[in-house]
Length: 228
Image (cartoon, rainbow, N blue to C red; front, top):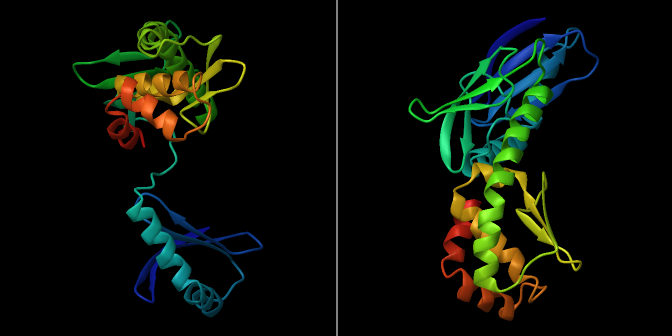
């Protein structure tokens, strides 16, 4: 495999020639880096013509990444920034058979992640997610108690899981909260809890629902922007 940096049509490209059959083009966050993987047998002219034909798409993709602050996929490695209740921490991997849980150093703003030997990204993600799950389980009961007193409604059950939405409330009075709320400021958990409890009164997001939110969580619009 060979690797080089080339400039075509004023676009800087990382070109890797590999023993592959097809050519691949990727635009990588967070800076919009352009990476091309090309077969060893392909000529420079073919590669350059391919890139030129994709110029408009490349520029459009780069603009989207930069304007929307798209981040690179997490690798759960040393030096990454991770969050807990709205605070930033630098991830530090530790290999210690006696330590089973994530440790937080508030003074140094370091999050220590214990990992097994030959750990993969998936294993590290699962360990950290279990930590977030335990944090949510600890935080939810007092928040639920506070919010049920505010709204005057109580759910049948509250679950925690990874999901696309921040929260969900079904017609069986069961509320599900997003595991990633543990990464956000605590007021975001309260906002989502009140939001879902209001669905026990009004199931849709119409005017009546928004009036309930205005009553029980007056700054909900501000928090909604923050949580995004």
